[in-house]
Amino acid sequence: MSSEQPSLPARLRSEAAQVARSLATFGPSRGRRWPLAVQAGLAMAVPVVVLAALGRSDLALLSATGAFTVIYGGRLRPRERARFAPLMALALFACAALGTLAAAGGTVAVLAGVLVLTVVAAGIAGWISLGPPGPVFFVLVFGLSAQVTAVRGGVRVVDPMIYLAVVAGSSMFACLVVLAPLLLSRYRREPVRSLRELFPRRWGEAARALVARAAIVAVIGVGAAIVVDPQRSYWIVCAGLAVVGTPVGRRDAATRGIHRTVGTVVGAGLYLALAFLPLPVWALGLLLGALQVAIELVVVRHYALALVFITPLVLLIIGAATGSVETVPLALERVVDTLVGAAVGTAAALAVPLRADRD
Image (tube, one colour):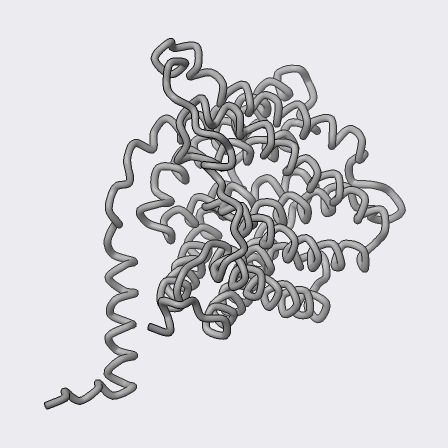
């Protein structure tokens, strides 16, 4: 005798209960996270503090972009990460350079850049099995670079060449931070797998689904930004990519979308509390480093809590780098953008299922 399938309301209640439990509990531990967290925090804080101490507070917060190099390849051994980090630094620097070029071309060029880069970055990430955090930071760096080097009132916010020099310097420092463990002989003696072994190139179902989902997020996200505010396109798209930027099933994508929304709302409140503190730039650098440490410690166990720290970190960088003092409007805009992006990402996951969803 076959049992009756639960009704739709019953299934919805069950799914809602599961999401609620995920918000209230931590996932399983996935090994030591503190070495990666410390490296990411140092890569974020030290360049900011050094530039501030040298009297270049106007450039200090721009250097935070280079720290994103460290967060990729966290599952690798130290010698493997030492080979991988420079490649990521080059890729992120290329995105920064493309962002400055797009800014010179105006709004249409930036929107086209977000659209194309989202699909291309997703394709490469899927093809080489890049892993978390996927293509999202490539688009984030592109959009942030376009925003901070844009022309406003006939004047550039930041000179593109100076900006790229700061990004290059901070990326090089991030690579040195990744290399630091090799000062210990036990890490130098570890076996090293080839990059092809670590990132096998395959164009399978997961890669195709990632590109299709990313294309949906890019098209709808950019379209929504055209209606609301073109300068916010990269944030909307990044919010969607964060949901579907790795090969997850429909249920996990929906859960990530809800986590991202909840985390961003709470994180925006934390940003408002921090933004009104009269912190000098060097202290702000230490704060960004502490936030980055917290992110890396919790991101694999509780995505919403990680977003509570990610949101103020990125908003503080954007607000200070662009000279924005409209703190409350900035926070509200990013909450709205995240709601839209997370909804689009979830819809993309539902529209393009993985094999596990169909089984």
